[in-house]
Length: 214
Ligand code: DX5
Ligand code: ZN
Image (cartoon, rainbow, N blue to C red):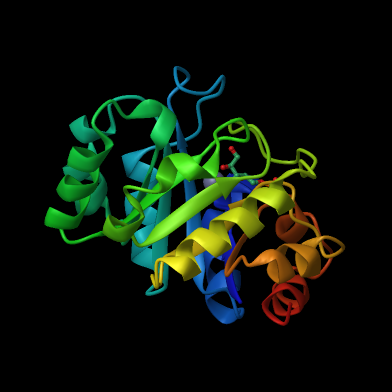
């Protein structure tokens, strides 16, 4: 299982220590949530934070864009240090073009889908992407509850990927806990994003280890 702690739940006053903690942990990726206040009803952080986080780690920086017109900023996210750039299907008028741009810049490309978006809309783009970020909460905030129907969507997506003989990763994002992680893994996910479950726990490294062993 790949574990991707979401820095959104980190303490930004001690961001360097949080990054060091993650470096020492079994976390695989750093999940960085960028929000624009337009696509989602919240604003998080942008290039300066990502650049500084990048300097603290050699782990994969997995940047989840919750923004409109991501094509305007793809190159800047590459320069800030993104290894994976994920855009929302609901925010892209020309998704195929967005994906080609991301890959052309040398990043892995992901597509995120909101809870209301059927996974079968991904059918024709699956072969072009590295990852699907399946949102199991409505994007915009950490600390929300996992939407149960997401399990069904993970299973459908797993079948689509396997039937097509592809290696696209299924990343599940939102409301993941130590209690529901196993069910999510069994449904077919291979990347778990977790914010509050990790950063609000007494021992974040131990929590990461447990998620990793899911
Ligand atoms: C939500 C973000 C998530 C969020 C997850 O819009 O995409 O990555 O940080 O936070 P938790 O794990 O607390 O639900
Ligand atoms: Zn996210």
